[in-house]
Length: 337
DNA sequence: AATGCTCCCAACCGCAAGCCC
DNA sequence: TGGGCTTGCGGTTGGGAGCAT
Image 1 (cartoon, chains in turn blue, purple, red):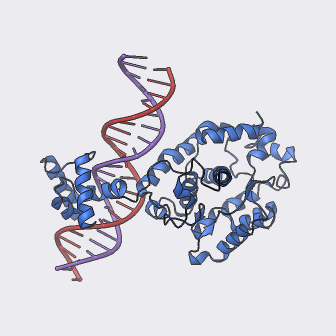
Image 2: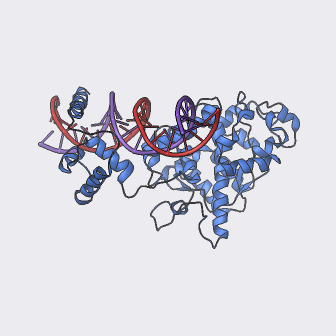
Image 3: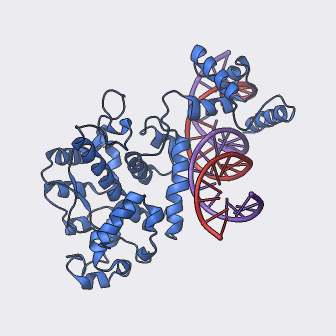
C-alpha cells in the first residue's frame, strides 16, 4: 500500500498548500456537490471533485455524499425497530457496519457505527462488562431486545387503535409498506437474523409457550452455557424463591425478578408468527424474510432462562440510562413501586 | 455567568480490494 | 501481468451542543 501512502501524502501536501480543503463542509460546497451529482451522477470521485470545482479529495466528496447529501437518507433518531435490527444483526455479523446498514434502508454504516459506539458500548461500560462478552450479549438478548419488541408492539397497537394508522411517535418508514419501498413489515428481519434467539424459542412460543427445558437443551451456545447452572432453579424461578436465592445476579430484584426477566413470547394464537418462525428456521438458506410483525407479543408469565452472567450485578443496572423514560416507567410499574 | 464534563456525530485516516488499461 | 487509480470498509478523532456544577 505504498502507493496509497504516496497518494495520501500527496493529498496532504495539497492540503498544506491550501489547494485542498478539509473539515466541515460549507453550504456552498454541499450545493456544488449536489448539483454536480444531480446532473452527472456518482462515481469517479476524484475527477468529480475537480470537475465540480470542489477543493476536496474525491474521498471526502464520496463520504459527504453517501453519509449526508444522498436524497434517500433517513434523518432522525434510530427507531426501536432499527435498534432491534442493529442489535440482532450485530450479534450475528459483528462490526460489519456496511452489511448491517444494507438492512436498514436510509441509514449509513457510519450512523450505525456511531449508534453502536455511543449507545450500546456505553451500556456495556455501565454494566462493567465488555461489549463483546457473553454477559453483555445475554443482557441484550434477554433484556434489551425483548423490551424493544414490547415497545414496538405497543406502538403498533396504539397505531392500530388510532384509526388503524401509525403511532404518532413512530416514523412512517417503520411501518413499511410498498409505498416507501422499504421492508414490507415493520419488524421484518433477514432470515438469517433469527439466530439471535434460538428458533426453537420462537417455535415453542408460537406453539403455546416457552418450554424452558427445551430452551436449556437448545444448541444456542449462550443457552447451553446456562443449562449447567440452572438445574435446580429452572423449574420455576417465579414460584421458587429458593431458585432466585441460588442466582445471586437476580437477588437485587427480589420478588420482581421473574417479572423483570419475563420473556416476550409470541401469542400462541398467532399463526402468522408460527409460520414465520418455523419458516425462517426451515428456509434459512433462502434469504426469505423472517417476519416478527403481524404477531401479538405478550409479556407471558413463562420464564426466561437465567442470564448466564453469574458475575453480572443486575443491581447496578442503570435503568434510567439504559432505557428511555418510557422504559423507566415500565420498569417502575413492573417493580410495583 | 463561567467553567468543565459528557455525549454525539460528521469527518478523517489507514488499509485492502477491485477495476482498468 | 503489473501498475496506477478508485472504491469501500472499519477505526478513530475533533469539535459543537447540551448539561451539571
